[in-house]
Length: 152
Image 1 (cartoon, rainbow, N blue to C red):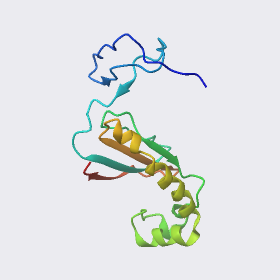
Image 2: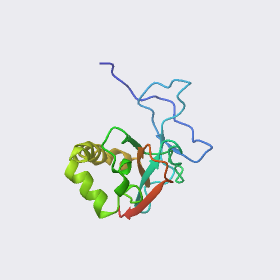
Image 3: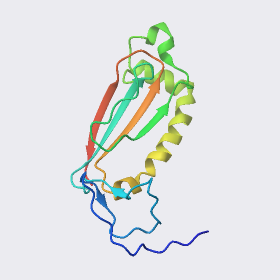
């Protein structure tokens, strides 16, 4: 395993406002640029946005400026939207929730999502104030968005 020593030359600030580390522990590669942290400095609550979207319409854009978050492909799971009684409902409607829970497949899928979400501590430590979770499927519906804030 290679050993890394701190780079002796101080890192210059970026013009785009993103913070950089004061010392670079990895040798710089000219193609990589400087290592960055969020320009938001961890101030304010962490805002979580959850999207349900159709791949036919594209992955939702990140309005925060952080560049995105997690995107999960749900097309492999059993989709209640393919059955007539559920076509006009959303994942917030009780019959759809029951369908998904009774089927059980989504529970296993979400266990992996939750495990990944639990490991976002490093993301928060880097000072980001926004995190997206996007769940994509093949339905043609417009993106649905749920947003909440949590204190730091």
